[in-house]
Image (cartoon, rainbow, N blue to C red; front, side):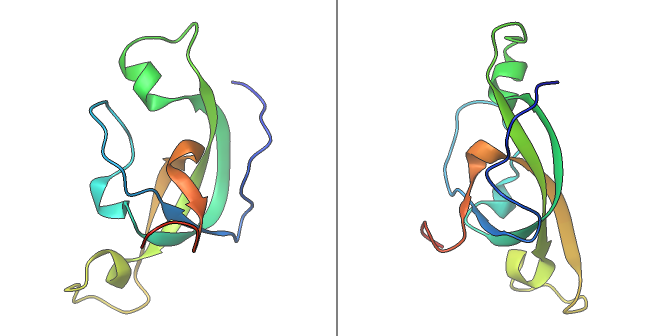
Length: 103
């Protein structure tokens, strides 16, 4: 585990980059382009794309975050409660400050 200074703080609003990839990623498709709130820092870990190709020794490291989304934002037809949320882990390379990119 490497120590890195995180770009985002707990409480920051972030948007998941709406990008495609030909490589493995932990970033779920349904979160891409969506805005949520950082609720927890996780230790820096190897970039999932490097980990998938077993480049552990020379792989790139990045901070990870737990981001909370309103389920009604993720799924417009969601029929649950308005307060229902989903939390997922995102690497820093997939996040940008809310309002910076396309939504």
